[in-house]
Length: 121
Length: 110
View 1 (cartoon, one colour):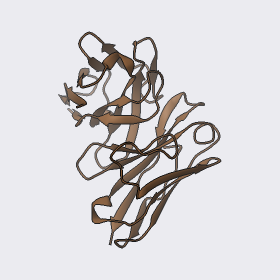
View 2 (tube, rainbow over the protein chains, first blue to last red):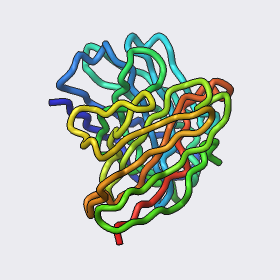
View 3 (tube, chains in turn blue, brown):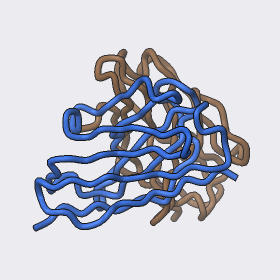
């Protein structure tokens, strides 16, 4: 059974940093790209970032480029999202999701339960 | 501001057919696969349709997807109360070099 478990969310002050983690199990982790998607309270889905199976290719939404860094540790079956220079508009539930391919972002067939990041002073 | 436009709401009575549209452009829907997601209240999204028309294992055949040019549609036939959810289309956008979601459509079963 595929499972994705996010952690690392919480309350952070504007300008602060946070690292989200997503521990995966139930599939060959290195064979699939992984992605992060966020959802602000009461709003729609926004794709944030993705990383290829090997970790050699990364992709970012323009809204987070330069502030967010995605990485993965295939030995630990874990994908990370480092979030810097946090802004109020980054407040959202952050979902980790498994891609259906090894490169790029196509379908996202399994999702974690989400981790809430709140940016407030 | 999403580049994929969906109607904000759609509704129907049990048993009816509901169709949700997703309008994009040549850089996203026009040149890439379309995906559809269902998000039940308070839960994570679920992949409903992949590569325009394909259903993952376990998704009822009441759900079907189609694509024509720069637009796509999701149809729900035999509407059921458990279909009440938010639905999002998505596609890779070559110009943005990013994955884009639609604005979302809330389906209500009357």
